[in-house]
Length: 274
Image (cartoon, rainbow, N blue to C red):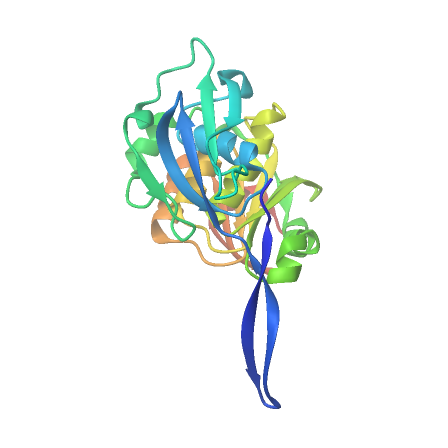
């Protein structure tokens, strides 16, 4: 597997002067996802948990609903000048009977900054969301939500050395951490967590909370909705379209989750306030 950190020289300037020293940075490399040998997408990601990332991406795009829809995911063809595998190409084979993915007919670049930008609409998500979030009876105390950012931060090992990664965590209703993933792309971190849930047979994630270390974009809400997650909590702000999608889909959306304060933009009935 590829490295997740790299050392680069840096000139540090401060009140006491300047100093040159090496600095630890998060690795960002392309990952090409192929389906049956055909290129499907390229995403810029931090190496690690790539198989989870692919499962999560395919789930979010409506290509698969469970791990049974995938027969093989294998690394291929990614080699450097020395002939070593760079682990930057994964080929997916779908199981017989799995639905033919419409998305496989297009090729797009997914960046660490924005994910699959400009492609989504409320109608498109509504059509491919297979679970009814309004049926969820999940209730979470506000005091439990307040603990999630610190729980995630304590498990961000690569962030500790680089300061350059997003995190996504999947939690139970009582705040127990099920899985945490880090990545340079917030959407990749979410895909890695949701992909873990796919391989563990936990989808739909009807009794869980998805927490993210940054903002809540439309795309992250979309991924939560398609995976059957009833609650998304973000440390930073949501976008307007993210709020619209959450409200229409029955998702509880929390933003600015910092300490004991938070903003609830949709689905406030699921949060128990002391």
